[in-house]
Amino acid sequence: MKGLWAALLGGILATPAALGETACPAAGLKVGYYLLGGAYEEGRGYDVDLVHELARRLGCKIVQEEAYPRIRVLKMVEHGQLNLATSTIPTADRQKYAWIYPYFYSKNMILLSHHVNPRTLDQLLIDPAVKWGVIRGYRHSPEQDAFLEQLAKRGKVVMANDERDLYAMLSQRIITAAFALPLSYDRWLNSPALSGQVEVLDLFPTSERVAGGLVLAHSDFSQQQAEQWQAQLQQMIKDGSLRKILGKYLSPDSVARMQP
Image (cartoon, rainbow, N blue to C red):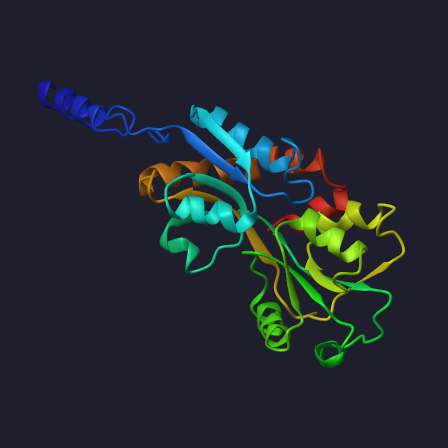
């Protein structure tokens, strides 16, 4: 019996909690957001609510949270200035410096100015009126990124800092086309600046949806800590908490389209 109690006590003392291996980075959470539709704008959005709920469940303190251009957020994560980000497409390069756990899926559609006549990809490549806006650091499906490479070779790509910049250029006809997610463009297309001026096209019908994921920096999170965040994120998906958060900022149809 004495040996049994010793074994049990040893098992208890060896747990991560007992060893002080919490889910929280030592320096606290340093969060970077992007301007993205219902995800983040002026301190509010479903990404903010998601991070705050995960932090609450895991007992972690948020010491810094701010919005930056997308490419800057990822550079700051890579160099240890931030340790958490949101709504990021997993790529091999990004997974070299962070764990990325998807929590929604969506598909980029084409926003095309009514002043542009072509309605096929081949026509868009050669039409002189086409100027394609692209947000710095943003990744699309492989087929869409390959199409953008062809446009860039023809000098038809114009860079935007964020989605507000992208839609402003579209309304001012600095650009005449762009890729965008429904969760981002829905409310913009109903604004006076763009209403009736832009058509939504899907010229990549077989293209897969892209994932948006939670980013945890290797510099501040151990694999065990990251797995605790992943487990809690999966729990929020299963118990309906994530759907409820998304529903505060998006239509029921948009929420349904974002599910795995």
